[in-house]
Image (cartoon, rainbow, N blue to C red):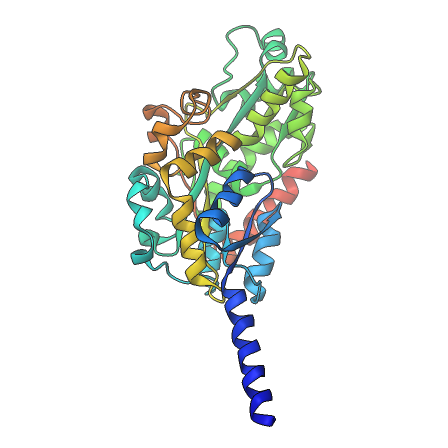
Amino acid sequence: MTNKLLTFTAAMAFGATAAMAEEVHVYNWSDYIDEELLSKFEEETGIDLVYDVFDSNELLETKMLAGGSGYDVVVPTGSFLQRQIAAGAFQKLDKSKLPNLENMWDVIEDRTAQYDPGNEYSINYMWGTTGIGVNTGKVAEVLGDDAPINSLDLVFDPANMEKLAACGVYFLDAPTEMIPAALKYLGLNPDSKDADEIEKAGEVLMAVRPYVAKFHSSEYINALANGDICVAFGWSGDILQARDRAAEADNGVEVAYNAPTEGALMWFDQMAIPTDAPNPDGAHKFLNFIMDAENMAAASNYVYYANGNKASQEFLVEDVIGDTAIYPDEATLENLYTVSPYDPKVQRVVTRLWTKIKSGT
């Protein structure tokens, strides 16, 4: 009787383990994938996909650094990924299990290598830029038809900003986005870690601070779409959402996005496997599935973001691949820059400076 019970218990434990091995837990940004792909993955692999969403890098980072997240695949932004790799939060990819790596785009891999040398821990999912969104009609009314809507002059020249204040300007509440842009405006290295140069960038921002209505990292979407503001310095995808919402509402608001001609920050959302992933083999199957050219194209066609998969481009709809706000032309792409995390000492300088800029004192 005891032996039978032990045998039964062992069988149950084995069955439970086997059942768990047939699940893959994915943690991604909200509204960031075509849900039909999730069903397709389950049908093709026989693996149950448990798909959860988050809305900030900070939330994801808290889970990653605490350990025991229970996820097999997560999607941090590049600079956060870099910190999390250093903290031991991720495992190296087994590239022998990822034959679809051949589909990836070397141009993007060269950029993401700054955060993940050799791309040993991650693959690119989506990428975009940080730049200028405008209500074209209102900006033309204020500055004329030749307004520099594709230049940092629009938002960093106090003479322009003083006039634009009448129709409303929002900036990202993100020093890691705004300070590099101000450095670029000054002709300095946007990835500078020199405290004196960072202070100079702060002077640029302080000079236009009186004309910024709000610092916020999401409210500018609806504000721009509704015509409540005329300029936002924000993320490409958000401003394109504002453009589409305005078009759907047919409210007379025309929104345009431009990566500044001086250069724009390029951001990357990377898929990676936590060190303690319950099912790393299943995680690799999910990554390989995502890197299939048609699957990756389906994701981009749904969310209207660029991806790091070169082979997917032949399957992208024209509204995506043909939109230079999503896929910049070659000259613009060459002019994009990346930045790396600040060390603790420089971070204190940045935090203090940003507090001063936001308060305007």
